[in-house]
View (cartoon, rainbow, N blue to C red):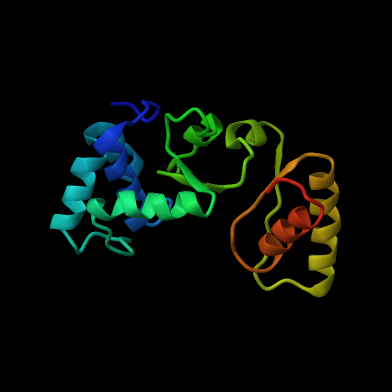
Length: 168
């Protein structure tokens, strides 16, 4: 199994459960998934509850109900290998195990015309205004604003994009 192979059925359920319990960017997880598959990695973590950076527990049996609730809220998940998953992310040392998407925008297409806007969590009022101007201007021209979901500059970038009806 490679990182770009599409997952189906029970393998997909295990991959989503794994993405819910492992901290993003955990060293070695993507490599383990590529080598052994998400079910084996998840089982290994469940056996070794002392595993580093495991932030929660989610039984794979809970995933279908979680996905149904997400779908009612307009949220979907893209996994590596899915058509919507941006292939550029596979170049990262630790690519995301899953991406949560809300709204009708195709994530892969949006990633082709995107700009990252990131900065300090504890930013100044000037930093927020400058971010709003830059991110809002780019989003208004159809650029997808990519940022963390943190506080400060990242949040200001998302708010600015949403404020002009742009993709974020």
